[in-house]
Image 1 (cartoon, rainbow, N blue to C red):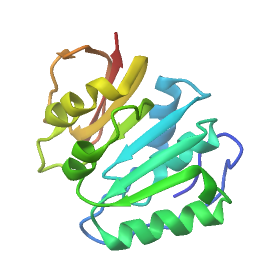
Image 2: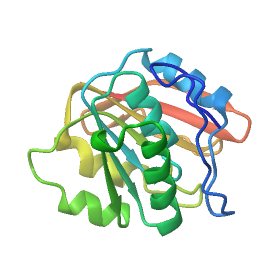
Image 3: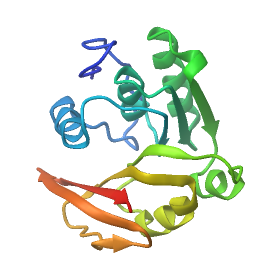
Length: 179
């Protein structure tokens, strides 16, 4: 697993290495970042972060700050190690807590430009998470959801509209934009 583009292109990332953590293949990650645009800005949120691959890719491509949220201690250790390896510790906030608790405890003025939601496939939390995030997204913010290919998310969730969707093997990627 590696960073696909930007200033850290081709740098390797450690994996969490647990059966409960599903890593996104580099090819799929590259396709997702091509769909959302090569250069990113502002603040990123990586929920169910695992190794932190999505958020670290966002930082490599221009995001200046990323919040990583995962409830697994090994995942949080891996994110920290990966951020340290890339020299990006000052640009990350790592939260060891369940996603729902993080969302409920966010400061009202915390806003995100892009969000990655990649929960275990047996958790049907996409609409609830997006609903909690709605007031923390700028107009034109993007939300990327990775799910089982069998999960078809609605065309609209509150003020977010589905703008792209693609199936890769066993997974479906759905991208929303805040209108």
